[in-house]
Length: 305
Ligand code: NAD
Ligand code: UD2
Image (cartoon, rainbow, N blue to C red; front, side):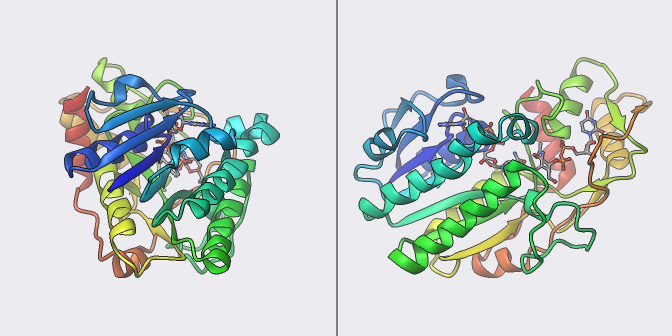
C-alpha cells in the first residue's frame, strides 16, 4: 500500500512512518518542519519526504496521488500556540483537515485516519471520559479538533470517504520534544532526570492522567486502516488507567536510581484535575488493547535518551 503521513516528521507521525516502512509499505511524509525534524525519519528507499504545508491545497493534492491510506497527524499541537493565534492555527488545524479530506475524496483514497484529542472533554469532571459525553471546548485547539471530527463524519456520510477519528489521551515515548513548558510532562521529566535534575510538579502532584505509549497508538492507527468496523467513528485511544504525577515521578526516580525529591510549583492555570478514558469503543471496533505497561514504556523512553 501507499500511505501519506501528514506531520510524519513529528513525534507520533514518525513512529507511524517507521511502522509502515517496517511492514513493507510505501510512505510519503508531508511536513512543514515547524515542530518536526528530518532526523526523526530514517533514510529508506520506500520513503519520500515533502517539505510543504497542509494549508496549501495544491501541495496536498500533489501528495495524494496514488495514495491508499492517509494518516493525518499534522497540526499545531500546542494548545497555547492556538490560544495566541486562533486564526493562523485554525488554517492548519481545521482548514488543513478539510484540504486532506477533499483531496482524499477526489483521489478515491481508501482510508483517512485523523488525530483527534482528549482536549474535547475539556474540564468535564465525569470519569472515565466516554465518547458519548458532550464536548467541552476550552481552546481554539479543541474547537478545531471537534470541527475536524465533524468534517470527517460528513465526508463519510455525504461522500462515502472512509474516515476514522482517534482521540488520543496523553501519548508518550521516544522523540517527543521536551523543549517547551507545554511539552508532554513525561518528555519533560525524562529530559530533566536524564541530566540528574529534579523536575517541577505543578500543584500537589495528585492530578492524574492516562498515559499511552506511542507504539500502542501506532497499532491503533494500523487497525483503523485494516478493519471496516471503525469507519465513520471516533474513539478514545488511551489505556483506561490513571496515575498521579507523584506516582509517575516515583517510578521515574526508581528507573534512574535517584532519590525522589520533587519540587512543587504553583498549579498550572486551567489544569484538569483527573483524566482517564473508557476504551471499550476502541477495543471493540479496532480489536485493540494497549500492550505497553507504563513502567516498560518509561524504561524504553529512558533507554532511547
Ligand atoms: P508534533 O508537533 O510532534 O507533530 C506534528 C507535526 O506536524 C510536526 O512534524 C509539524 O512539523 C507538522 N506540522 C504542523 N503544522 C503543519 C502544517 N501546516 N503543514 C504540514 N505539517 C505541519 O506533535 P505530535 O504530538 O506528534 O501530534 C501529532 C498529532 O496528534 C497532532 O494532530 C496532535 O494534535 C495530535 N495529538 C497529540 C497528542 C499527544 O499526546 N502528543 C494528544 C492528542 C492529540
Ligand atoms: C494535554 C495536552 C494538551 C491539551 C490537554 C487537554 C499534551 C502534551 N498536552 O494536556 O495539549 O490537549 O491535554 O486536556 O498532550 N506538569 C508538571 N510539570 C511539568 C509539566 C507538566 O507538573 O513540567 C503537569 C501539568 O500541570 C499537568 C500534567 O503534568 O497537570 C500533564 O501535563 P501535560 O502538559 O503533559 O498534559 P495535559 O494533560 O495537561
